[in-house]
Amino acid sequence: MTTVYDIPAEMLIPQVARELKELPAIRPPEWAAFAKTGIHKEMPPEDPDWWYVRAASILRRIYIDGPVGVERLRTAYGGNRDRGSNPNQFRKGSGSILRKALQQLEAEGFVEKVKGGRQVSAKGQSFIDGVAHSLREAATKATPALAQY
Image (cartoon, rainbow, N blue to C red; front, side, top):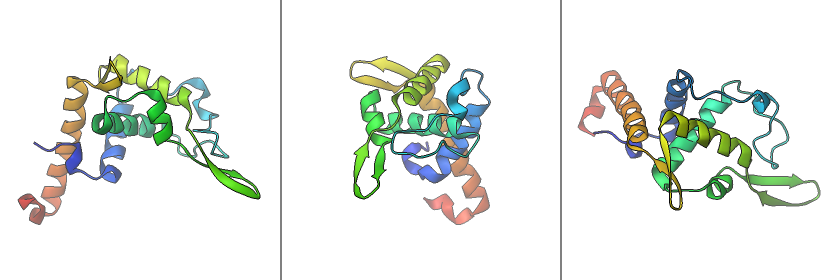
């Protein structure tokens, strides 16, 4: 069976985002159009579907690193803040975005709370592995030489 580890993130995350967009529980909040993803960013994201991409990325990150808490995710989604002539400093990402996305993933049943943070549930693992498997099959049909891997 194909898992998340077998598919590159650049291929997996956009496909998972498209699948999450079809689910009723995953919806961007009203303020998402105006929110920056962290203090280190100067502008909000330009992609109108950025919420689904972030939710897919969070789901993948929890799958790989779980159980993981909001603070560790904030660190993972942080970056360097431009302080003008002063040296850049690392700043964590937005916790509100992460909490809301995690709550939505929990409502859908993909993530569950455990001691030490959140981890992917059996339903979530099945969902993301199914997307990875479908991507692997599509790549195999397009390039039969990949079938041996």
